[in-house]
Length: 236
Image (cartoon, rainbow, N blue to C red; front, top):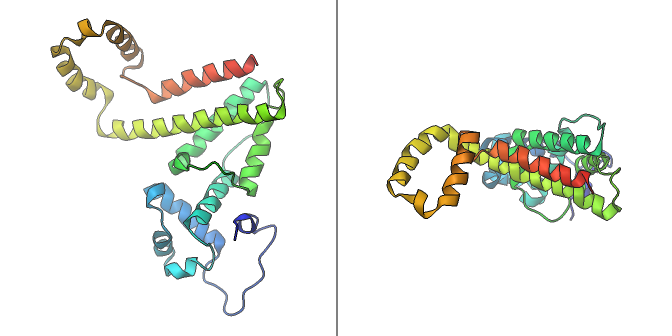
């Protein structure tokens, strides 16, 4: 069975089941799945762990969702349904920048969302409502509808990549600051005399390091890349 009937469960309620009223419902399972993913990441989510969080047996969950893939679709759609957003206004560039920032905030709230890999669309009210809303940012561009879809997808894919980079950078910086890392690694590198062997890399790397106080800065890379991307779309 597909997932559409569950994604739209609030608009097309399922028939009541015979017997005692169940202790939990689909909404409870989805909320617990999101909490589990927020706490432990996508790869550690399992129906067993979600069931433990709810205090029920894993077979109870199978009465509400068919499998982990179905639960993941419901979780993704619910996060998109609940995401914070404001009505879009201004130029296409301004609207796309707002879309980018709202999605970056969504990934910050639920980092596991940036690791969901699928070519298939989630066909629920959260995802379709988000798509409808964000298409307003590319509607004024002089493109056909297929290209408008691709322009929006390009921005969202870039933001998703930035979110993953920011997540990884935050983990590294929690263990060691860029200054501490460079004080150790840079000293060893200098002893090897690599500046003479790689003059261009040394010159550009030094300039970048001085500008960002780090060998790389995920947030600076996000800002630079988004500006280039939006400038290009603005000229389309």
